[in-house]
Image 1 (cartoon, rainbow, N blue to C red):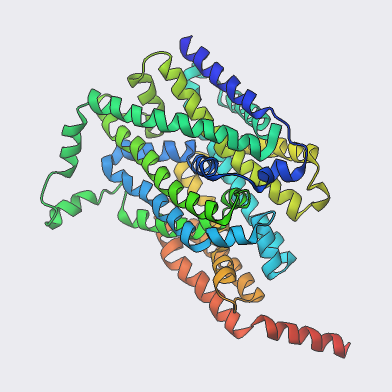
Image 2: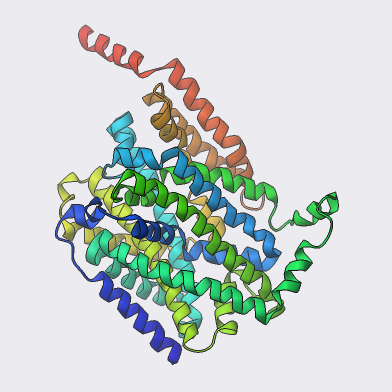
Length: 468
């Protein structure tokens, strides 16, 4: 009962922070493009730090120990790449949506195609976030039906997101950021002293690092390095296109604020995920065999935290899920109104209605399509990875042509789908998708751009018009 009271109090506080209406579409979607350094760091961290990845990464930590931190390093490298490769470029563009840049650079039809692929991916992400939040909150409520609980959660999340737009999202992110930075290190410290973490840590690192046997032991079949390396490549190629990050960059007060905030956020995200994975690596001392390793986080909360503090922890995780989903849904609404319905760009009522529809779609996807959270989370990246050449080429290579971008996108999408259909999760399809697919995407884009530059296409159009 004490846990429920604390949990409910924090949720009500979150609702109170969010219920401040936005009068204009620009304020609703971009917070008047005046977000400062600390709020931007907080909102970037909380946009990335989500319950789906948290459950998936902690499950790997429970299974393989501290070497699971290799997965956390994926975000450190991926977001650092975002900082140097595109953060400044996105703020210089400072548009209304990520897909809008594709329309400006390559034409409206390619921009709309990019928008459709990004929306599909984000709807997949949203479904995994709802699924993970349902798994986390369910123990607190005594095992409620998953369909009912996820429906309640989606309704609350939609109310929080649609009340005040991006300003509400940023306020909630600041609150969630502070609570998360307090909770997760505390959970690690409690687990460390409860299970003598020094001994457990040394057992994982014993041996001579100069011998092959030492590194062979680190090559765990449950977390092969080929899988980690493939995720590094995919993260570098997908985050640069992420609409939820693009929207936050557009909302930044200045170019300098945007770039430095992303760089710091990459380090903080790594530390937060790694701390949970280290804590999960200590859990086998208490629970030798979990029925589902994805339940490592709620199990740690139930076993390691006293009443009241446990309720606060559940509230923090609810805040984590809320801020992530709010950021993703807000970015999706920005794309829908700016890329498909400009007449609604200042209509807050329509934007709130779209948020409700996205909540329903996420609820259905969570219950019908998501089984293994990490695998479905990775799968949703296929449409985004296909955009990598078009984006980087458009930003950094003047010769990138419209038909080159089209070709690379179609080839990238087809290759990703083929890899999943042919090799699948069990066959390690991410290796073939990333290590072979990225060179194929960029090779195709470069070759077609050189063979069919935009100036030739424009000359042909003029010739056809004159002949007509």
